[in-house]
Amino acid sequence: MNKLSFKEAALKILKEADEPLSAKEITKIALSEGMIETIGDTPEATMAAKLYTDINNNSSSKLKKIGRGLFALKNQKESAKSPLLAIQSQNDLVKKNLIEKIQDMDPYQFEYLVAELLQKIGYENVEVTKRSGDKGIDVVGNLTVGGLTNVKTVIQVKRYKTGNNISGKYITQLRGSAEVDQRGLIITTSDFTKDALTESKATKKMPVSLVNGEKLIELLFKYKVGVKEEIVSVYSIDSELFENEISDTSPKLLLDKSRAIWPLPGGINSYVDTLNLLLDKIALRNYQRNELVNWFISDFENVSSNKTAYGYLNVPKNMGLIDFLDGKVILTNEGKIYQESKNLEILFKTISDHIYVFEEIHTFLLGSTKPKTDQEILEYITENFDVNWSTLAQVNFRLLWLINLGKVKKTEEGYKGL
Image 1: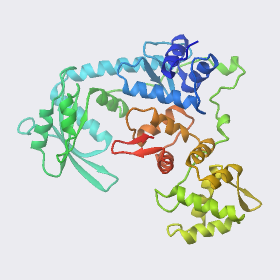
Image 2 (image 1 turned 60 degrees about the vertical axis):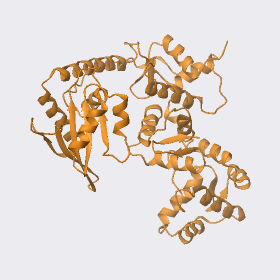
Image 3 (image 1 turned 90 degrees about the vertical axis):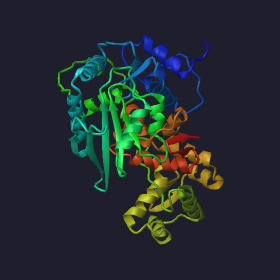
Image 4 (image 1 turned 45 degrees about the vertical axis):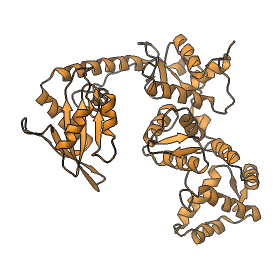
């Protein structure tokens, strides 16, 4: 049969499935039925990247995300095997009704609704301005970031019907009403025109952030403003009772890869250089661990404790480049190959073989048409892989290593795969 693209194969598989599937499950079916052809070692990561990108960047996508890391067709409404479909259908209906109610409410009530939302988000000293003489400013507030930065913000809210989009003149008006040290925010129940989006990002002018109706509803749901969360009992079939096969997504299959990756001292652009120095040193003779710990402390001024130095020594160990034997540090076979060649492609492949979701981040960025922020990358990882990171640290450490390897470039908009 003719080979299909990853997206085409996913659409075909999901059309015949009676429940949402993960990227890994879709890939397994596609490969077993000969639908796709791949030369990469992680086709499930490629599949996840393709589907995730299509949903986020293609307004006419036939796909949707269900829960954490599951995909379904947009027109799939119910499934006995996945109550998540019914829950999402209910939430989508509530979102539709909520925007309609907001569009019909009194404009002044809407301003107070927005004020309450801003307080929930973290703005302080939020105040709805008087109805006359406000110079186009409806709400004011201060956004304090980490107790260090206090951003005075002027907010304009527009309760417009869907299709009645906000133009760039409103941004110009808001700038004219603001003071020198203030920032702007426009929130609408509709959307923004292209010239408004362009004007909001104009250089050498007061920054103005834009929140459209879709984003507004997402925020109201997230911070539970105007909506109530109801906890109900939902039952699903216990598949393990009827099937003996262990799921492909079982965490037991992931134990051969390390979840943690650290930087190395010497500067954020010198990770590979520091790694090469360490491996060349070990190639000369098998050092005791404490000798290399002392080397880190003596050669790098920012390394001042044994605990930190031991942590750095674990970096190449987790990468599969070195090992510990009878108190000594030795190069692994993979470590010897890289140490002799200094080939960055070999290093990338070795790290990918030993560090969880390392290559997958690179694959995701390669498959994305636009640069991604570290927060978007974290969302992709937590939705599609068996991780539950509460901070961006592990994402950022992986990105820094990928940058050092020449696999990723950081731009003003985010991170881009190379």
